[in-house]
Image (tube, rainbow, N blue to C red; front, side):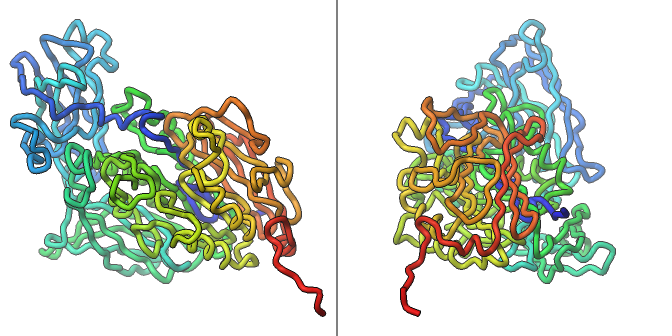
Length: 615
């Protein structure tokens, strides 16, 4: 039987949907690696005996957005604690944040590196010879780069040598396009990053059917300042200018048609700076396949293994690779929260958008918001913790477009072929009587199940069921007040599947309501709806979470590994969910639902309308 496309969640969402996410507080799953560096305590002890050189010095001569560089260094007093930091802009020693850090006294540094690696990495005799070399990957981040050699470890760094500068041929080039579904079925958006302000150039997208005539659509532009952030480190050592973010709307797209597009900046001298030409396929109106990797802590990691001393995101590169390898079968990605775990170190957003570009430039990359993008005390988040590192949701809503009515609230619905997705924001209150609760009920109740028979609920934190040990330590199986607030809505409106992230493992329940299996767990369900199946798929890349020692009856399948979920709607009556491991892309769990429209109408526990005996 034929099917179309692929959707990942949180990576992909559309005909084929891939769903993935992973979450955890820093205390549970490790810190943002850059936060380990006490850069403000750096002392300048430049040594004549220390030397550094980097080559090549000019990158991107053939339009590349990333290149590898060779770093060579020598030091007469080597130690296993020595490390190499990459800084951008290159003049990192300037006191650029004294206004925010009154306790910083020159000549101390106040800006974190964008990445780092220990000097003895792949240099086993460095501690003896004082000589070493590294190959590191740089991406175009709108500024030049320099490298620095530090002694004293991460907690008491001493700056002993600085390299020559390295730059891209055009640091301002338009880069890292991210597609998204618009608010209408025939609309798609293109968001990208550049170094061009509106005072320098006019941004636009040139696009049209593949091989056909092209049109140009204007783009809006936004940027951020340090004062846009809510707190440290985003406002202090983690601050880095994010450049200019542009978004253009491509309207009037025909279903199941191939298009090409490229971003452009028209300079005031009349010349145009172009991005590379990229192809996209607008999905069919009756999309058949959904590849959904729902709960994904973070899929970002450094290809050169920098910043990875504590295995912060050990599985993310495999997940990204498996998704990109199957891209021809993917129509959309949904990444529902904890996007890149920048945690206030803004340079990491460039690293993340560069990593996902092969995916996000080709299919819509829909995002939700998680604790590591939003939470900050006094910022209006439901949870008053420090997980966002002072970003308080500003970076997420700026770097990615979503069809939300209010980008600050970040909840929205989207219809894709035979699917309706109701995407909640767990970092805002969802309880009965709140604005978000009303949105959730409207999203679930307003779907036409003849057109979109498959109703999917998505949220970052687990509002349903999870056996995570950190929930168990709190005496619960999900977020407090989550299931209690929403389970009657899921049951009343017959939500087929609820997908969550936040917990870094995989777990599938039986069809469950009020903590009881209404139907036995199985690989195939047929006939009328009985209850919602809840799936935690948070093993996209970050360190894995353990399960409780005692297994609940509703917990049908578990896997303590990295992976993602694929949803496939073969037609209006058959839905397939597959769980794939990131290591090999093979299926390790699956189930199908076979259900006709009359089965959706059928009465079940908790969803029966009032009746009358009158004729």
